[in-house]
Image (cartoon, rainbow, N blue to C red; front, side, top):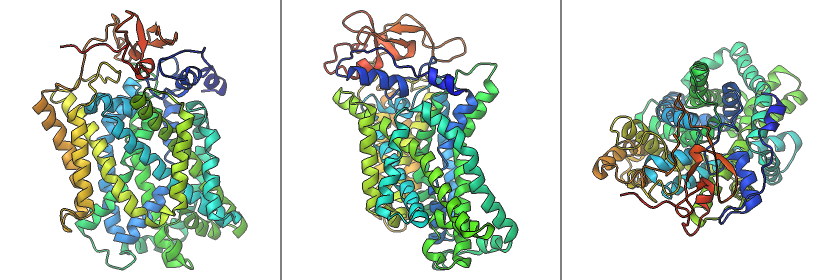
Length: 556
């Protein structure tokens, strides 16, 4: 897609007035990034390839290198590799149904979660979980960038943290238009800077391979052990919520048609659950580089888990020191920017979405962009890098519970049991406030697994907290759906509009209707009938209707 085409899709709309929303900001900003609503066909002008590359550009982060190094140093190579394998399998199995629904129905994961067992307000808790994911990993990547700036330019860490935060803000203001361009243009350089040194190390130091497989961890006790494998997998599974960031791009996929079916499926599989294949490879490389540093570099143990030092040492084997340092810093900065624009963007969507539903007010995405960046900066200044494994291991339990519950509702409750409606629903008035199927399942799965993680169920079960979260999140949704007979999924089955929601290929309809509240035109899936005016009302105006004036009554 050309830049002119990208620009043409984001022309500013006319002013609108919505109940409880800030008229100009709410409408203009929503039409840019669709914070609270379905992404319409008229906006989705990108090809399947551009969407996929944009989504995969967001996984350029260097946190994988640090995670791989940390779990290898703690548990040894064998346990770390098995842990990474467990992580990859879980992410692929849970990520597929979520990615499919997002690309097929053009919804972000919060909108999917609403109709997949949580309810209109029940999914707010998952938004908080996701927002937490974004600022944790923003802080982690910002810390890595600050390390690079300190090493290359002598910038103090505290100032590097601030710089790595502030530089992201202007890049995220314009949403998908700027993000897609940034990801497409920076990916080739990032690949070269990352792959070349690793390939060089394999060729020039073949003995490093055997040393890698023989490594048993920092204390030498890393013999093969199921508990260590699961502890390693638990740290890696803190990344399970990454599928939500992939979905923030995948929702802009073009309609699936017989003509583009193969390209469509390829893009969805690679940019959806397929992200974990790239992530797992980076974790293995990070561990490989850490082992090499420990064996060959001065003070290697102290810096083995810091990606900037991992690449710097290899670059020094290839080129003059000044150039090696420059390229290491460039790699760190590019990687940090590529992922942190996604972290900041997705986090701002999550916070804004939750706030608007709870309060009925739309403050603007940029307000929560600032909030998300501020929290991340506090984490960086608190030196979160030093207790990374504990933070990620704890967070993994919450992320696993959410993602597995939603994936189970789609795969089992929708397609096998038929108790959950197959077509996703997200509009206020169509859903109950809270659906116990997903909401209770997640709270129980997360709560019990966190207790297990901190040893509350005994030391012998402590390493198994990820399995506890997965098991409960998989078993409870079908049990509760059967127990409630699917009663709490839909408050209404009829949205009061006499037009089909889907076209002849099963894609969301592109029929255009006018919202009588904000005076804007929106596509059919975003609209319902108004309870009091007999006209149409859009999902944002429903969200900001604090008195429920436009919300359709429940159907018996």
